[in-house]
Image (cartoon, rainbow, N blue to C red; front, side, top):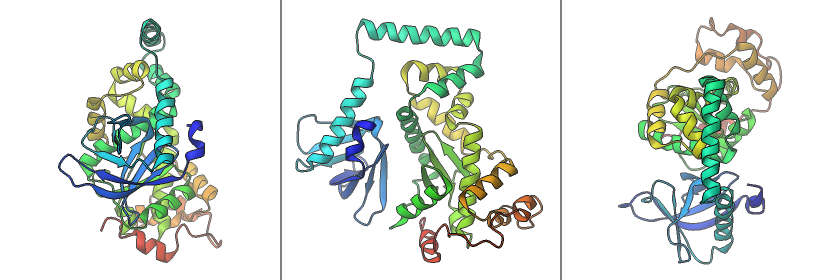
Length: 336
């Protein structure tokens, strides 16, 4: 990704189509650190493509047509005059291609060597250690690609993530304040929150639409961040998916659709584990966010969240609001 620092925050105009029978739409394409974000002309996000999984459909031809790996019906067209964006995407694809194993004897030796090491690890370490090893060694770009692929499968169950005019910078502001990489809002499916590999946090719409205070949503994000710190989301995926998933990830760097589909269906229905209260309070202190609004949102009586109320670090303190009242009201319509 360091090869693309010169292109970060780059934008271009394009034509996007969500499916084979959908009409093409004028869009703005933004190049970030790990994703290509496609928004409409009112700055409403339409799609997020992992930079690791972009494929050019017509090499050398114009307009250039791209699609996310595994879904050729969703396409993005960039005109020949969008030279800087085309150069950035081509440079990325070239860098990723060079990073992949070369065909031939060396590649075969590498695959067999990895497989042998994986099987040896299974014998020597056992399943848990093998899953931990796979979690540690997978590159960040692969994590993000897995997270984006998993998001697509969760959206089949929960519907597309909520999007509204001007919501993207507001969600980014909450994400920055709470120390997470990216925050997305889902209508249903995910009952509270869920962390995905690659830094994605999904939050149920109820934390946005119902509370009067944005500190409630921020608290829910902090709680999910602590869960992700306690158990890496990629490790959770591998542990739930069995040894086959770990072996596949170590030998190919990816996980197939069947594994991701099964995990998505099982995970969205699960109740999230409880969070250590001391660690959660420390996160509220670190981010200068009040803990009592979140505590009362979780338990109106305050009985089960008494510690978060009594030791609220922001009691009698002036704090920088997570969002202004006007921004919060605007964000509450994100799923409308």
